Image (tube, rainbow, N blue to C red):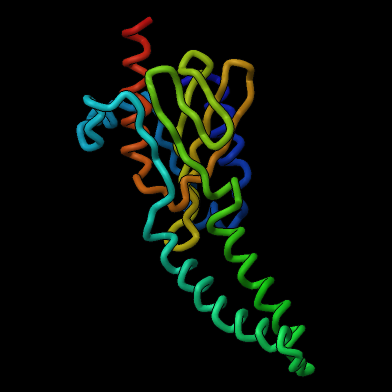
Amino acid sequence: MIEAAEKFIEAEKKKLNRIEKLFGSYPSFYHLNNSSYDDADGLLLRDQKVIKIRQSFFSKIVPAFFILSGLYPWFLILLLVICGEILPVTIPMLLFISLWISTIAWKFFLNPKSSFRIILSNAGMGIGKFYFTWNSLDDALVMQKGAGAKQQTMLVLFTNDGKTHRYSLYNLSVGYEKLLAAMKWYKKQSEKLS
């Protein structure tokens, strides 16, 4: 483990408040170089040159249902406005439903911080609009904070230029174990090729 990762772990442990320390809610860290992630057979990486990891389909079902259920009254109220039957409630209700639909669409489908793809290949990994070659990455780890519904899982990348990049793994289609296994496998493949 490199110094940047050690400093990051110590800084995260210092951020805990007294209640978290009292109950032992320390974050868990899982490193890329951990030997328990050697088995990448579950992802069938042997035949794939590139793997794409997206948001889980099931995490989009409930927000899509809320958007679709909001579109029906939105169209009805819009039809009332177009026909000229404007009640005192129609315009504010149309604006409220529009705000509701746009907020849900932004949070679950359009926000680049929570809806991105991870693309892994022999050359490197792409996360959203950013691309990292395997040579530019010093270390990577997954950090889990909290428990239950409040649990946060973050992919933390340490680059050669001393920067730390964090990405939330919330709602991805694979777990962090498979992600780390795939990252490790592709990194080994790139080392064999060079």
